[in-house]
Length: 266
Image 1: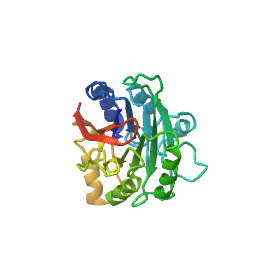
Image 2: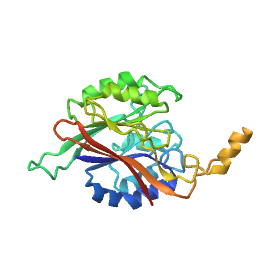
Image 3: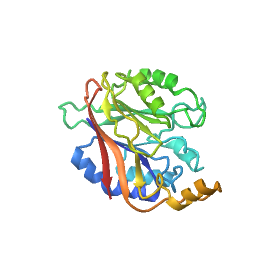
Image 4: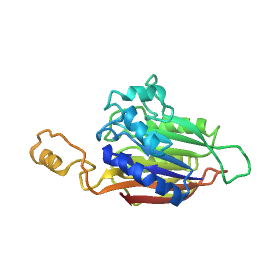
């Protein structure tokens, strides 16, 4: 099977990029499943049922999130009712929503009618990030539970420190199909497949305006650095790119066969 993971979708430019480019990418790569991080899809910060609806309508199957989860109060509706929306696994017990889920995928390349089952897990790092439960301990336990249902497991690890991302992925090598990092909005060039068969990329980048500072207008960010005075960071508009990665996975073993970075211009 082949899946596409789309890096952090930023504001309306990012949503438009997904709507415009995803049909072509589905055909070009013969995609079976699409996952996107949508935590910045509403005005550049947070997510709402409306922006999630746009992303799903564009062809995304599952939306993950991160530390901007709570920036829009309407997110509570998504957490309560949308099974295709994930929040980081390592929030304390009792937090609304879910950190992982499994999804059936039709298998057109097999004679059997049984669908392929894929699990998606969302976790958040702790280094330079808001304090949550230990993602290493909780993810290891959750992966063990998920593997009772399927060997095809994709992990979005939303974290700041590259060392934490690599260590987390190394811990899960051979237990999951892929670990892809999000949060920094800078696409890295370290795509690889670990010895145990887990595909890895430190950061998928972001989908939105790249004539910017991480998707925001340049001047207010510069003014903040120069003066220390709080500024309103509006979403930028120009040079819109879709960033992400395509991963090919062996259906039977769940091991990654290939990983390829994606950077497409609108």
